[in-house]
Image (tube, rainbow, N blue to C red; front, top):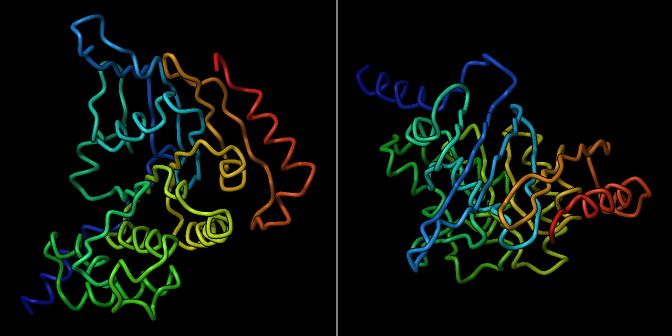
Length: 276
C-alpha cells in the first residue's frame, strides 16, 4: 500500500494546472539589460515587451539575430532574470513554474549524453526527479512511440541522424509532462527535407498533447507554417514590431506552403520588421 501511495504522490506532480484563465503566460513591461563589458551603459536586449500566450496555443518568436528572441525565451524559462517588468505563468512566477517541472525545453542542439542509449536519455529527467522505475519505463516507451523512435531505443546518439536526435530531445522534454514546451531554434541546423518532416511531426505531437508551445526561429516560413500567432521582433533594442494571426486551416501539409494565403502571410510577417 505504501508503494502505491508513493507512486500516486509522484504522479500528482504531473497533473495539469487548474484552468483559472485562458492566458498561460502574461508578460508586462518587460525589459532586460546586460552590463557593458567595458563599464559603459548597460546594453538593452529587450525593451517594453508586452504579450499574452493562451493555453494550448502555438506561438513563434521570429526575427533576425540580435533581436532578443532567445533572451525572451530564457527569461520566461527562469534562465535569465528580467531587469524590470513582470512575467506570470498562471499567476505564478517563472521560477515557481520551473521548480514545479512545468517547463519542457528543447534547444538548438539536442544535448544528448553519448554514453546513454536513447531510452536512457529520455528517462534521465525522470530519474533525477526520483519517479518510480515502472512509471519511467512506461513513459519512455510512450514518448518514443509518439516521436516515431520506438525501435531505436537501444541505440546511442552517434548512431542517429540529426533529425532523430532532435526527436529524442523532444521526447525527453515531454517525458515529464510539462504544461509548456519552450523550443529554441530546434530545427535550424537540419537540412530542408528533414526539417519539413519534423514540422509535420511537431504539429501531430502538439495536437495530441495540447501543450502550449513557444517556438523561437529566424525562419519566417517555418513560423507561419507551425503557428497560431507569430510575434515579430526587431533589434537594437529587441522589441515587438507586430503580432500576426495565422488563420490557415490545420492540419497543414507541404501543399499549404504553395497556397496564396500562406505566401501572403509570409509577406505580412516579413514586412512587419522594423529597423532591420
